[in-house]
Length: 370
Image (cartoon, rainbow, N blue to C red; front, top):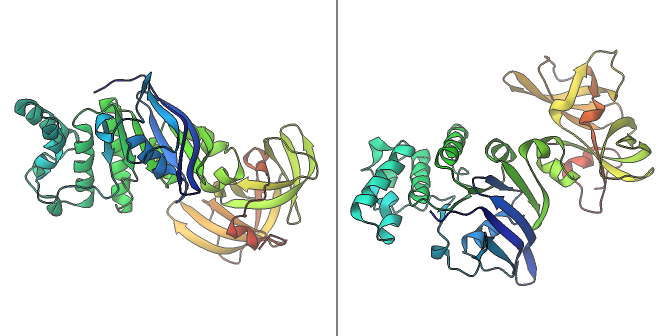
C-alpha cells in the first residue's frame, strides 16, 4: 500500500464538449476517511470518481497525494482499488481466481498471492464459495467478491461507484454494514458514490453533496441532516416539506414567514431581509400531531393518505389553507381525520429563495409556480 496523509483535489473540473459535468471541485481527504459523494443522477458524482480513478482526464485542476501529483498518471499507476456497480467479475473464473487476478497481474510471488487471497476471502466471509463461478453466487455474494478483489492488493484508496444499487433492500442493509466493517478493520480510505442519502448518512464520515456539477455542501452526516446549507440540499436530504413564503419579520437567527396563509416562525440559514422570498423546509418527522393547547407553528389539517410503516405511520394532510404536508407519527390516524399539527421553530428552516426551478410538489401549495 502506498500510504499517504492527504489526498487533495484542487479545482477539479471536467467538461464534455461545452457542457460542464464537474466544476471546480476542491476537496481534501484525510487518510482513513470514508467520504460519500452524494446527489441526484447527473450531478457529477460519478464523473468526480472517474476523474479520481484516472478513467477520465481532467479538463482543469489537479489531484495530489501529499506532494505527489497523480492526475497525470494512468489508472494502473495510481494504486487505487475500484468497486463497480455492475461487479465486473470474470464469469469464467472462480471466486478465488477473481480475487487473485490483480495480484497475479502485479506478479506477486505465488505464496504471497495465496496468502493475501485467503485473507481477503476470510474478510468477506466467502470461505465456502471459493471454488464457485460468479453465476453460482447471489448478488450480495458477487458484490463481496468485487470488494475483496478491490482490497486484496492493499490499495491506498478504494473507490466505490454505487456498489449496492443492484441489490434488494435487505441485502443493501447487510452490505452497508459489511462495507463499513471492512473500512474500519482494514484502515481503508474510501470514496463512495451514491444517490441514496440514507446510505450515505449511515456509512460516511463526511458527505459531499453535488448539484449540477458543483459542490453544495461538505460536512458530517449530522451537519447535513440537521443543517443543510441551502434548500436544494434540504430537498435532497429528506426535507419533503418545502414551501414558498415571504419574510414578515427577521430578528437575528429567526424569522417569521407567511406561507400559504400560515404564519410560521423558523431558524434562518444564511442571511435574510424583511420581505424576502424564502423557502421553508421541514422534515416529515418534525411535524407533530398535538393536542389543541399547542400554539407554536400550529395548524389545522385534514388527513388525506396514510401508509403503515411499522411503528410509525407516514401520512399526507392538507391544511385549511390548502397546503399539503408530509408527516410521520406513532399516533393512530386515518384518512378524513381532522388533526392539530405543530412544528418546533428550531426544526423549521428558512432559506433564501432563488430563481431555480422549484420542486414539483410545491405545485400543491396555492400560488406556487407551475
